[in-house]
Length: 125
Image 1 (spheres, one colour):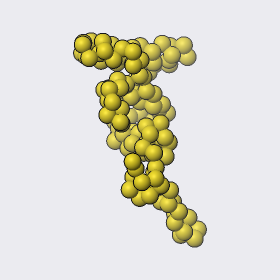
Image 2: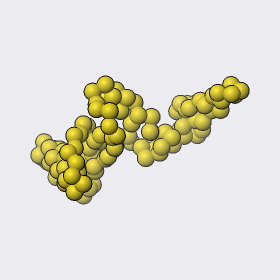
Image 3: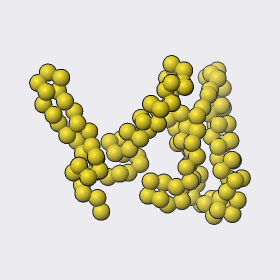
Image 4: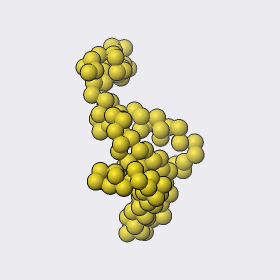
C-alpha cells in the first residue's frame, strides 16, 4: 500500500507570489481518474505535442473497449486494436460533423491500465 499524502508519490508545491510561503499537496491515490494524481501525466503529454499542434483549443478523450470483449481481443488483438482506433476516429468525426467542424486527432492505444490489468483504451487529443 502507498504512504498516503506523503512525498513518496510526489506532489505539488504552491508558492505565494506575495509572501513566498510554500504549500505542499501530496499525491495519494494514484487513480487514473484522480485530477491531482494523474492530470500531470496528461498535461506532460500535451506539452510534448504543443510544438506540433495548431494554436486552437483541444480536448482529451478516452475511448474504452468494454471489458466483456477482452477475451476476443486476446484472440485477435490486431483486429480489435485497429477497430477501437477506427471507431474512436469515426465517433469524433460524427460529433464534429454535427457542428460543421473538421477534426484532427492524435491517438495513443493503451492495452493496460495503470494497475497493469488488461484494459484496452485509446487516449485522443
